[in-house]
Image (cartoon, rainbow, N blue to C red; front, side, top):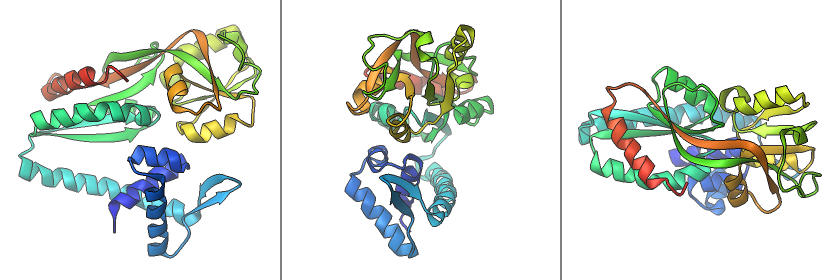
Length: 295
């Protein structure tokens, strides 16, 4: 069984978008489709369907994804254990990358991780894509040593926090939306909207949530870390995506309009363990800070 195909299928199952999944897996759409077809042929059942231009997993696909995630975790554990022998690994560092940032951050960070592994072959890096909630929980439980995620600068996060990049917060809407022609937005302009966030407002957007409550506006915040499923939703409703301006401009098609939200920023932050015994972690942080300035 090809574990790469299982990984590709799990990413597709989360994004429900061939383009997004292919980008995250660093393969072509055609290669991804071939991987899915191979799995369907192997298991002799349909795993994913296209209904009204929307992808959905079949019951068999959902079950395969659930079991595949377990298999992939076990394979990673096995590889880590075996690598300790031939590389004489002395320590393992667990690095989490927020799933909403992964497509944008990973290409920038890859070089840093590779250089670190070359200069510190006795330290094994485990890179994991997780939700912001999972990252924060794992930092608190010392299961993750460092992580990259987004916040609005006011959330009380565990561990130590280092700002890697600051961007203006913005709302992305469909061109037909009444806010699309605005140059800038105030918090009161969001009244009556449904805004999608990459993480729960209590976790990473507490300042925005507090401002909305103080202003008395009726804004519904919905959490959906899947960027590409959200973009389909906002084309059909009075909705928008809260994100940093650069992400919207560079990574979502010109079908959407990004309007800055005045008085708010989004920070790409490096959150890391305060454990002083993690000396290799400090070395890794220097590599990340050096090689991600263009993030």
